[in-house]
Length: 191
Image 1 (cartoon, rainbow, N blue to C red):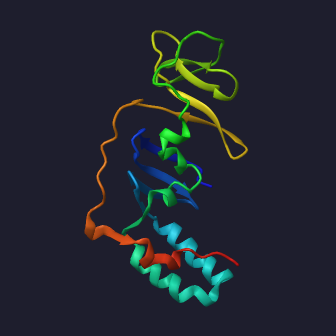
Image 2 (tube, helix red, strand yellow; image 1 turned 90 degrees about the horizontal axis):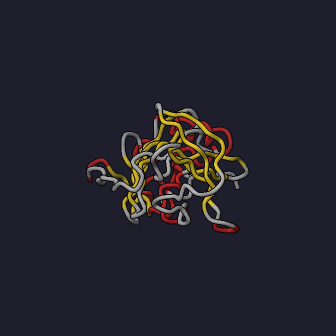
Image 3 (cartoon, rainbow, N blue to C red; image 1 turned 135 degrees about the horizontal axis):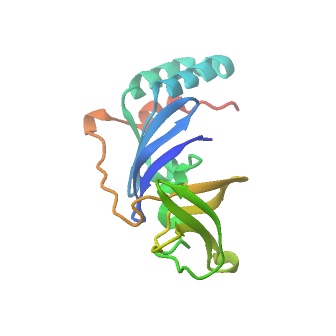
């Protein structure tokens, strides 16, 4: 599971950012129904080590895939990219469909915190199954700065910046892309 995810995402399916896994930072780009992942060298080396240990018969295919993927963006359908833990947050429309563009300051305030000199309070918006806990500026603002949610069994806080602003993203250059089919040897699992 990624330890740190830093994404710029919008409700229209555009997303760009990074996630850390196995001690390396990987880049991700999602535009509509297409996604690209640029795997860091440590991630690729971890795949090689795993294959050597647990699937030595597949090592030649893994080596070939690593050679093709190194320094490139691997292109996937967006739905496959969004299966990575944490990267489902790229799809804000689904991940936070219940989160409104602004939040009423009515309701119980709690859990104050300060970030970047701005003090926020936690508000509960909605009720029952439509309840969302959001952090909004304590004074003079209703635009969410954070959302409390659960990722697996762990509580998490998603910090929001430039909320509801469009994300400007472009696909990687065609010369820097390799298809997932060409590097399917990266998918090493123990059967």
